Length: 505
Image (tube, rainbow, N blue to C red; front, side, top):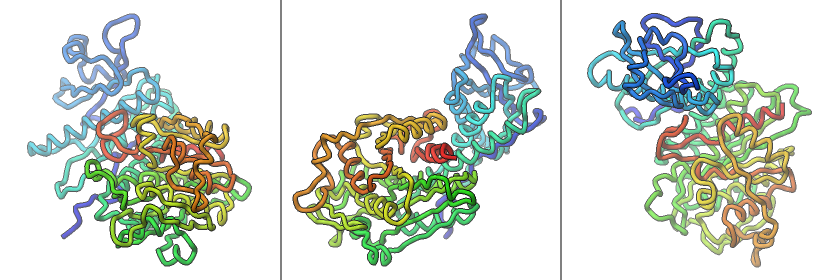
């Protein structure tokens, strides 16, 4: 039987820029909140085609707030849409694009259930206030709002194409380029979501590394190398082998390399992503409640994979390497134990105190390998690492630790530009001594504030290089819709990593 799993990556709506509205294609008109001269929302171009008037707007409660969407029965009998863009900032435009596509796709599914043929496209008339940043945000939001990962044999109707109609006099080439780059970023986020959402009965370490390698083949200039458990053993990757030792599905190390021509003098960025394809907690086993969500515990690795592919597609003139240590943390007679001492790549030893702190064990190997073998200019790691970050920052903001102010500011700015929020956390040297072990070089779970001490542990493997640690335990998953985010894996951090790399071009 064919697999019910959707293909990876799942398709997103295709966004095109056109010169004028086309007959027969459902039209969406944008609305902004009322200005000081009136009580009704301000409508964008071609509102007359939908027959919108003040009475109807008041009847349906249209306010123009970001993401407010209404189906509009047009005078000619066609289906139209009204979508609010709120304040008009990038977040509002992303929310509007996502909300429109959710509504349009929901309508398409209803039409299919009722035996009617759904529309395959929708078009949006953009107002003069929509600059290229706004258009890019709307396109990105629409593509991510259209993202859906569901394991089913049912064929669900979806909208294939979104046509954006710029206002008269707009620089259509600039608009098209903004949409092209936004589409690459949206596909990166969508891919990261797909990898995170894939069930772990399919997604073992070999599948994750192999899927990334397959996708890398289509990205210009991107190369992929997958190392198996035999290579890891020969080269002393004790952390990855310890964590993966409890599973019959052995670990892998994925290395992705983007080295374009002319980048020899550019900084070499190494991105490390946690690739735990399922996390039971090992012998320090997790509670059953919520364990099913541990299929997304490789969200950091997914962000790195997706970012490298996008960086290659954008052909950024900077050298970037991605490392994703992939392992399944399971319970068995061969699982590693609390009290074990593990020797990492390069020789540093770790006293294990909690097998559920497995992410830092595999990432320590990858960081040490990067320092010794790749000669990076700086390191950035990203992981769903600690529940402490969820407590401290909630579910929509990533924790940012950095050894240098300039590095932290670059990441913050990259997140601001792409719509991903970060909050810098302190690397408190008052807790550095707690990382030391009586029986080994370091101990895995020092006492003290969990997110900070985890970062301090990882710092031991960075060789004194400029380094940032991104803890995405909160925003990597969502249980409800907000902005451009759908429930499930969110793809958080992928866009930040791409924009961060761009900042060195």
